[in-house]
Amino acid sequence: MQTAPHLSARTFVEPLRGKTYTLCEREVTSDTWYRTIRNCADKILGTAESPLELLGVIRRLSRQKHRLKLYRRPDQAHTREGELLRILGAVLAPYTTAVSSHLKTLPLRQRFDPVLAMTEEQYHLAMLEIELVNRLFRSEFQHTPVRLAFLPHCLRDLSATCQAVHHDLDYVCRSCSAHCGINAVSTLLRRKGIKPFIWMNANLHALFRKVRSEGTRVGVLGIACIPELLRGMRLCTRYHLPVVGIPLDANRCRRWWGEFHWNTVNMEALRRLVE
Image 1 (cartoon, rainbow, N blue to C red):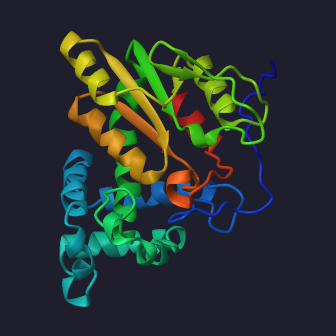
Image 2 (image 1 turned 30 degrees about the horizontal axis):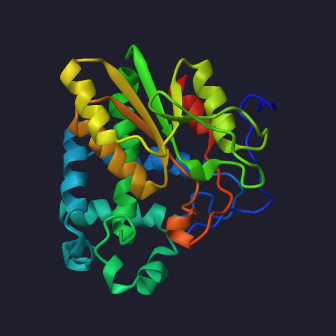
């Protein structure tokens, strides 16, 4: 078998394009987006009572889907909600330019789908929420005796026949391709003592209920497109599990495009999160 070198992943000569968001924007990596969201979080936290209080505000606001555009109006600029959305939109809009056109193409039956029908404002709030949750739970995650990671199968090498096998909770990577993102991520996580699984069949609700009922201390790391990652991180916090997550650089899987396209995740950001 071929083993991926440390921190390797497939590289691209032009930015990835997602169906709704693209963290790479005009670059071939998402490094700038990570600096942007960190700086944005620092600025907003400077006016908040605490990270937990701000997290509550973000989650409450993101559920008010049909009121978000109202908060962007000039007469709402003095409100906390209006100011928050203004700050986020000013720096994050370049990464979500495709959201509006995507929403216009959704058939009626999908316009109420909480994943497919996220608005641009909800994407901006989700980006900030992911950053805050990572800050809040990273230390606790690092000190849990059992740490699990759930990876998206859309990171696999599309030119190779995946040799992953089911083991324990779900499928695990067998390092069959040196160009596979799942291989690169799994290699890094195993070195850090984190058990990586390709999320295919595992019932996370049942797993987390079992973990909580048994009193087992488990930390969870997720990698997914922004809407799916957000849902997974909220599920973990509902079960009081320390969770951290890294978004895919774009949403490029079959659910969004009707077919799979090559995808990447920022390996340096992942390394910083788990080191």
